[in-house]
Length: 268
Image (cartoon, rainbow, N blue to C red):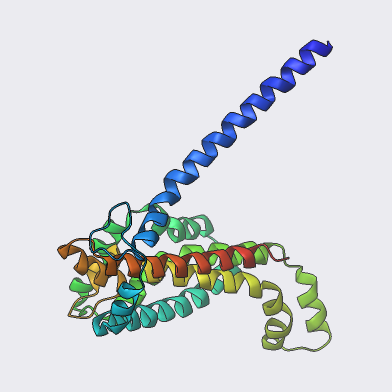
């Protein structure tokens, strides 16, 4: 019996070792390319190759002096801000509808809500372009904001719904009994409790909009570009160190936003 137990523990230890090694290899495969991009952004040579010639901040300096990059960044910030605001407002309303109310066709409403999570971005982009053309609407920042909102809305609604699920509705009832009007109940009681979920949803919406390329490519129109579109245009001339520097900055910013959103979701 003792030998069988020791053998079983040895086998379990061996399996855990294999799973750990496999997990490490998967993470290395996923994140090593990101590390290489960041590393190449500090290389003095224009062609990324190992070994590195020397470390420099030249490409970041040139990047910050490029006015077209700043114009694309401003467009991305405006679009992301509009998308975040609209997604959070609609997501909050949708979350209350899903969690607090029972109504006919609720299952259909939920299904329609999560469709953007299933349909490829290419199809969404083509569909939006055809829809805007049918309505006679010219592509602009507003059309991009609406398109990004359609993509981010399922995330914001589901994130806020998860916070609202654990909310004790008796707190609102107590505040109402004490004479607080509905707007004050929401502002003083409900909002502080679900606030972390709203912030996390906003960060998700911002990240999704800021990084989105496919939908933006179809419905942006004109000479205006977002930062991902600017990177795409630069790729026509090959992968330059300037692109590596830009990619490194976007990767770091996206990582910070997503990490913050996940941290907000874990708050009690």
